[in-house]
Image 1 (cartoon, one colour):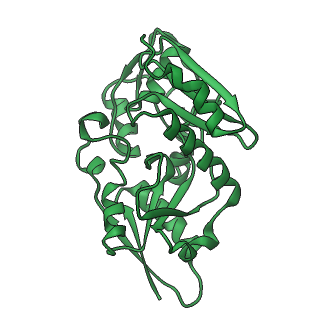
Image 2 (cartoon, rainbow, N blue to C red):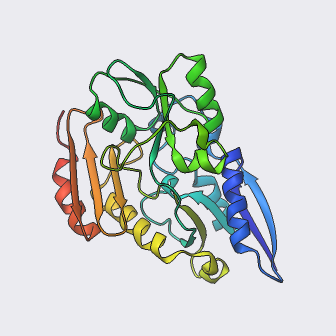
Length: 277
């Protein structure tokens, strides 16, 4: 049997796809990796909101699944929309790795620093931690963003710790933010194997039940609160409790709520979605 596995073509995405292939390998199954380019890969200059909402790194892979050109799509779970696309499902989540955000270039956040990130979630929380920061937009793959830190004279950049570690770049990390400092993106640290609905058995053996429980709760919370990829909305389940966050994009205020159910946390956060700065 041949299983065609689709992935973005960046070095990190292909490294993550190889992790998925390792989990899927079994006797009698032939695996073929199919690299693809997404809208988020083609346009590396404009803010995400000008390209599209959450999902700019997954849409083409989802279309390939629905059209039968691939059988499995490997995604960073944080790149997915908060709800499942019609006709598709997450057949497996690989065991989650470090979900935290990492500061590269400095051991701590200090007033007056120039920090690079394209994430509205990171921007809002960084400015709430230290209003004296200057946050500069920074896009590109991991290697590009690390290089641009030096080229642009930035004091630091913020990246996902798991991505750096998967690329063997853990030594670039100077500080890992505790979730109490920077709440991670829903699904951060987890890899999702997306398939056509009804074909879950193709990847079921790779599923990590605890990761699924946590990431499903995070994605559901974000879906219920609302907002696209530009909205400073986040959710993180630590294994015991779910914490959700809504913030002003400039860090003027941050609202966190914690509970056991996504519905309860989302209900507590919903009144703040349209709160003025």
